[in-house]
Image 1 (cartoon, one colour):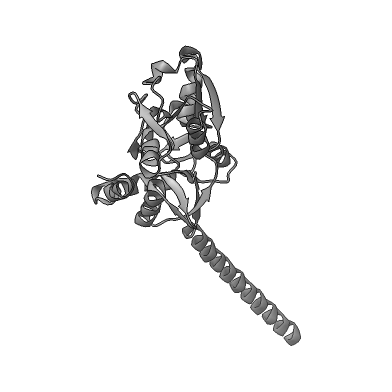
Image 2 (image 1 turned 180 degrees about the horizontal axis):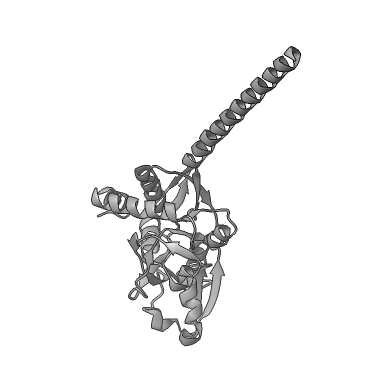
Length: 262
């Protein structure tokens, strides 16, 4: 009986130690999980062929969008990882779960709203017609009849040209990036291009591309920061709050002035 009593006591102690050990493991696991959640890094899609909003200088990414998303992340205390890619691949990459956020001079449109949720607008843009500097025939969009017009794939400029191709009687040719599109017109292979006003204004001011802007702006586009529809609403709220605070304290204006002047 004594031997049985000692064995029973040993068994009870063993079970108690095992139970305590199991609870300890659960507590540590919980701490690790909490730490992982706090250190989440949001993958941000950008298009670095789009100055002054996004471009690469040496090994460094620069531009309005780059500075803005970094400032918002710092203001709101979350981490980001920039993922450069062609503009046309950004929304598909979000749909494939490869990106959490997109900031790429992306115009807020009804079609895109079906797929993504946008932040409050952060920049007023608008499309414009651009021609070779020595072109005196095209003075506005009405003069594009029978002409070849270059656009960048996946942009609102491309959509505008395609939607109005029959009405304007134009041939639309598409390119993956802005520099290739600019070159097509400066070489005389296309008669005109349609691009966001601030982008082409900056490009022409920075370098003699042999191009000029003609006519009035074609629309009143606004840029927004995007997340996949119905997802990452937590970071979208932080983006909106951060954007609001940057505008209040003057940081937003400083970023814009760095690239576009006062």
